[in-house]
Image: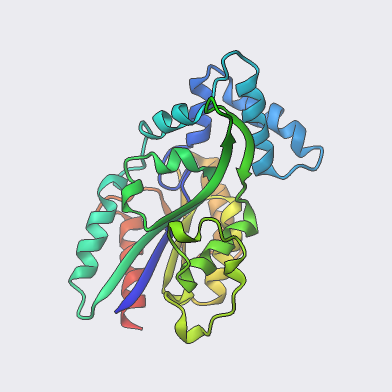
Length: 270
């Protein structure tokens, strides 16, 4: 049986920007948080992901009781706004590959710089074989106190290799170095050429590049209502980072849905 991995970023790929929605729910100006508050750390040579996580902790602890807890993140995850067609995407794709002339095992993954607690609490989390994201440590009251795991840029490629080597699931959660174990390519569970990566942002570039190098499929998505987002995504095409560019609409018959089907067909017939 051939394993195929369909890998997604999360924010602005499958959902509207969930961290910005969280910030807005706390009554904080979103533009200020990103362009001034977090940018002040970037100006001091912080990396973007730990910078926003630190600022969320600072924001949370600025009031008593703390504003951001494990439970509040879980509740936020339950109320996310998905891109069109996402709620039925996984069922539709599973049905599609079930009609293949050869047995196909299609699996879904998320590799995101967003907040893991939010992603794992979303209604679509059940469809994913594994989810990797940035996470917080909590104090005994459940309040966020420190970045526990940070996924940014090339950090995300680590999980491409874990998928390829079959290092997925809870049993690998506390084994950060196992990805470095040497495995004969013939023993890889899922070849990188049998992967499709879908993302929208700068943190996705290393994953785009890795899959392109090994003949996997790469698709950039953008918000059709946002010309700035389109310009950013178009640069991925111009720089030959991706195979295709579509608006983030996953409904059956959309350009994006058809692009995914074409990528699946190419992998299936290999």
